[in-house]
Length: 288
Image 1 (tube, rainbow, N blue to C red):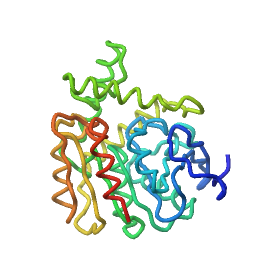
Image 2: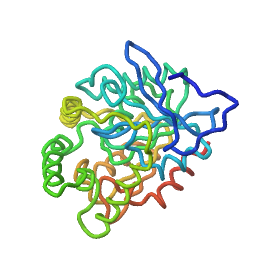
Image 3: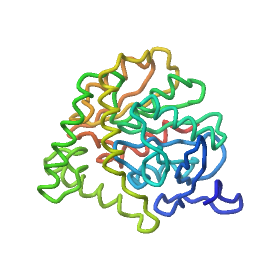
Image 4: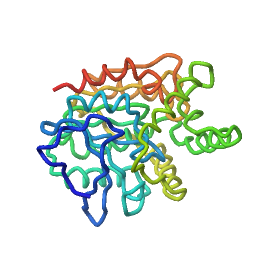
């Protein structure tokens, strides 16, 4: 797999068709996909707990990729990337920085969800000049109240899903009412639109290491977010059981000038349930 697609090739704007590439840095081979027109500031996507390249909602990613260079990647030890999952969010942020620099980017925008939003915060605190605009969805600040309860919530919903032969994301991301259930089924179906060259699933060990890192993050001293001056968009549902919705409001208070969207009757995956309105909102926010 080569590092860049040729300049004469037409831009790929469908995530389902984006080839998987690799770049090696720091002894790790990072698997990634890129789509959209090249040039300008890229949008780097940081994904959620247990997720691989195949877990991004195409309705959101394709909308952004119509006019922006979009890059998704697997962290070390996840999916098709080599290496091992580190046991802290700080180390995951360092890995993200290594990947970004391996592609020679000096300035990026970030789109993050859940665990990815925690990584994004550590990345921007450590490298503030790297990031132009920041999107934090379904996430919370370091030391946020009840983040450390994510292990119990996650395992409980995995059990509930197993008993009903469902995808755990249907329980973890969506309310269990009629709106939530239909949105969950539609979301899981969209994730299957890519039919070829799909990514490897995360291993149980890697998943457990990520969970422990989130727990440690939730029990850590808060980061100072008062110095962040990037335009920041924060979004969540009003009933997030994984990363409590109030933590999105906490982030909004702590990041000066940030924008906040809270979707009613929605859970952790509120941006996916409301992709029809969220996608154009985030495209507008990320427009240079």
